[in-house]
Image 1 (cartoon, helix red, strand yellow):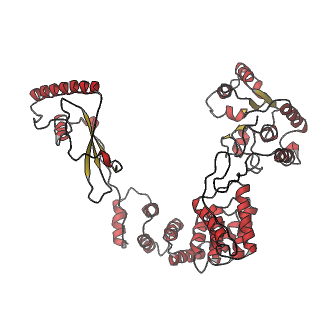
Image 2 (tube, rainbow, N blue to C red; image 1 turned 90 degrees about the vertical axis):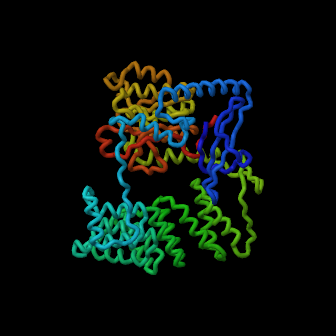
Length: 540
């Protein structure tokens, strides 16, 4: 038996200079054919692994004898097989077998379509016309061909010849989509002069652009002398929406590139004011800019960035870590020395011997969190918005007199995960699986779940109630209860839910609101979340 491998180079002791092409009657071996594709001469080598078991050798000899008998029998009965072909892998054997056993019409493989090759040099109008004629099936050939160029990052010159061809046919007018895709290629290849030309065309023809074009123009302008116009484009975006973290990142890096530190810090503070998590490359740019700088105010701001990373559990990549290390070591008058180290499971650093700060909450931190969640999130100054004071009090008492739960399930939304299945059966299946793991399960639901109907069967609900604790709210929303249960009393609780309440900050308040048909139309962004937030662990 022979195997063909490509790119294996790490077994020099296994090479065997003399290939062994068959198995003799006295022994057995496995011959492997390896090809070194990375060498200069593309060397091909063989090596052989011999078996050591005598029982295996005896069995192999018996199989070989049978194989030779069958081969001789075939040679006698089928004269079309050449005696010069000792086995089925010999050269030419596949072709002869295909001639002996032609494929039927049912097994004929479909013809392989020709793969279109994008032009590698600019074409004139006649050449583009001919190419378009060859692709009549393309409804919008111009848009399709420029899209292919975007995917393959074709040269700007080739893409520009497409625009020239389109402009010649349309009295100098080029469509918006073509301009945006051409702009993408110019930004990708950093063709600043072309970026400015497209920017002038768009500015003259369109009063407003969509977000994708704004993003490309901002990224393309930040490294030019007209970089401040990127800030004007950022202001245009603010008129209709909050700019993305990428928009802010490009403008900040552009300001630092042009030595305008105040603009960079102002944009950074503005970004944080929108509760947007900055890109790590944005933070890295600040550290790179501060290298060898003796400025206490700037140094304090960089330390604030480090605290931001700590408080938000953001972990820099290797490149960013190098920038932080380099900045510390470059501060004039300081004697910082950084090194990469390993932190043990216990949290102890092998470099300095100190223990890394734990992500577990202290008792004081946990009490503070409970009160803040209760005051700012659950109550929020308007209990009637999400529940009633009486029901909230009933739920608080329920949680107070029950042990901590491992799992909290938003019963209605979990039950509706499979529309074609009976809802009570889905909930029963989920709870049963969790109960088998000896987990304390709480199911939040509504009282209508206990009423017998085609979707909710009483016998299913009785089985669920034997395996889990239940809290049935009135037939109104109970969005405040899920975060309360998770964060008020059950520190190690997982949360199973399917929605985010739209008018509450997503970062701090998931909810257990079960959509009705009316609410589903209003909130099409419903999704499934199942897990435990970072830093939350089972508490005994």
